[in-house]
Length: 274
Image (cartoon, rainbow, N blue to C red; front, side, top):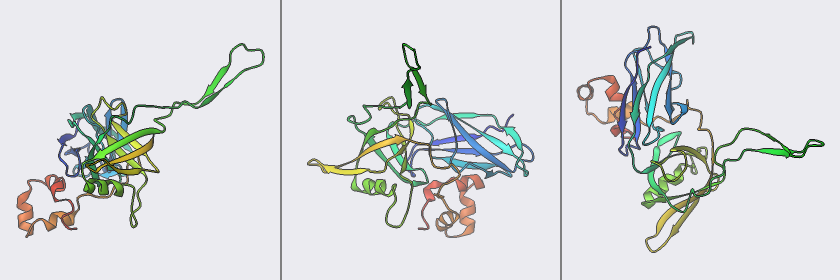
């Protein structure tokens, strides 16, 4: 089936590297779509691209695309009754980034770039829970086990460049007025450290350590690999009032963009309305 998306990769810090996924046309009768990304043999639904209204086309910004590997995007199309109309063709892009980035999945505005230091991620445990039983009369035991799990109890040390970045990092866990799940999206360029290029890491006791004559800030964390928060959940980064705040008149706003899609993808205006 045709209707593959157009993909635009951005590597700047507005607020972090990302891929804009645009479906300009879809199968006749499409009401909503679910957008999928496949990379390194793993498939995820794109955050914000679940049950996405798609009459006349649709777009979603993916802030969780892994770095340095091909990522293929496609969508499943649904009619107004929720019946599947099939999948679109795929399109592929590589997000070429050489630094590590960490952000709060539910609020991509909370994003920092940092260095995963060499003294972390050097001991990997992916437990395969089970027990060995010895049937009566058997010479050797029999293993009764379940599926192998993700990373468990992995030490990650993240070095940040400034106290401002550290303040942003701290907010990813929530503060006195905001609650977030203690799950971070950590994207590394590979091949080192030997963790998944896209890692959702749960950390319940992060340590902010300020040390050395340069007062460097390092966050020391013991993390478990977990599933991401529900992909239908995300705080909007770019709002209509941000676009309105950037222009003195509606005419100026209309003249600035060739299409509605271009307007809705201008993340340089994110947060202008306060």
